Amino acid sequence: MDDKKVFPLKQFMIRLFALSLALCILFSGVGPISASAEETEPVQAVELTKGRIITGFTGFKDISTLCDGYLGWGLRVPAPASLTMESDLGIGSLYIRFAYFHGEYTIEDAETGVSHVWQQKYLHDFVDLEALFGYAPTKITLHFTHDEVTIYELYAYSPGEVPADVQRWEDPVEGATDIIIFSTHGDDEHLFFAGIIPYYAGELGYQVQMVYMTDHHNNDGVTRMREILDGLWAAGMKTYPVFGTFDDFYRWGIDNAYDTFTAIGVSRDDLISFVTEQIRRFKPKAVIGHDFNGEYDNGQHMVYADVLAASVEISMDETQFPESAQKYGTWDVPKAYFHLYEENPIVMDWDQPLEHFGGKTAWQISKGALQKHVSQLEALLKTGWYFGDSWYAAYIGKYSPCRFGLYRTTVGPDVQK
Image 1: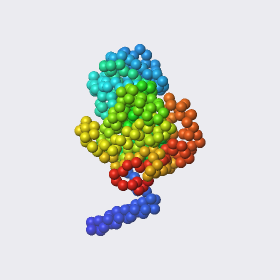
Image 2 (image 1 turned 90 degrees about the vertical axis):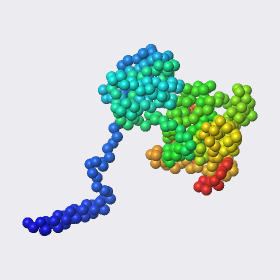
Image 3 (image 1 turned 180 degrees about the horizontal axis):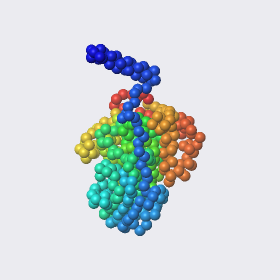
Image 4 (image 1 turned 30 degrees about the vertical axis):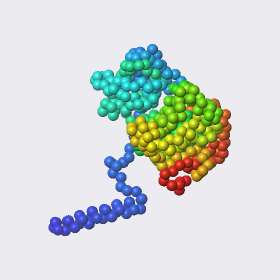
């Protein structure tokens, strides 16, 4: 056959196939799918600690409660101590819930002798062993060589995607934060500031930073800090919070609260210095504080609102608390909002379904996150207003988490409300 006739025929067949494919795509509404482009479900990690993965230990007298899934008991062990784990599936990651900061510890591939010193950053510490070693070791030993270590629970996983409730905290982002919430205590963030974290951190993916006045160290801090982390994670938070080290106590009224602080050696300037440093460190676009009346006349809430109001007036002045100005630079906060502030009011809608949470509302997510504060639930139940028939945030009257006011702005009024 003549080659000059073959080539046009091939061209015609190719064009006909392309046209047919285009018509199929047009009328089916879907594009061609190649084998390489097909989406595959991620491999789910297996929780190895549900089996007998711990094959050796030193220093620990009893490990029976270490992997039982119950957080009521913490194992406190003097250094040096070690734990060895083995799994033929490979150990892809660890999730350790510490009671106190231990600092660094060593993770060793017990078969090759290769080891890495791991610097603990968080109370609930996630270690990606595949990233650390470049592979998933089948036998590892944890070495705790300085100070005592207290562990509530230990989880080990095979390679793959770990469950959603495994907390993989990220470092606070200095100099690039969207919102700081100044919450006095753990649980206030899901009460008076309910809705903010699920909406802004979870749904919109904004950089939201929690700054607590207290770490509850003088009032069952171990339990309270664990509950704070569990609640924040459930609400959609990924950035690790900042904790102040001021005592947790309850006083009626701002004067009584300041008198108590003075009696324990803490001045108003000490508190303002702490808040001002966080503003300069994170340089937020907006800050959010408590009701100036302390919601229910809680003196510590009043103090935290008072010092936040003072801090936003001086954080741009390098002569005020020069140590933090030198360390972080100064910052003039564009917008400052306070709970229930009556001037320049805004009313947030926390009852709209959120895609990130599968259609649940910000209010529903905050209510669920509050359940993580188990030690506080009995007292919170007595408040009634929160746990009553409040199926919608908009129905809450007293201490409504929807009502805020713009206290100060450098960029004009709040147009979008």
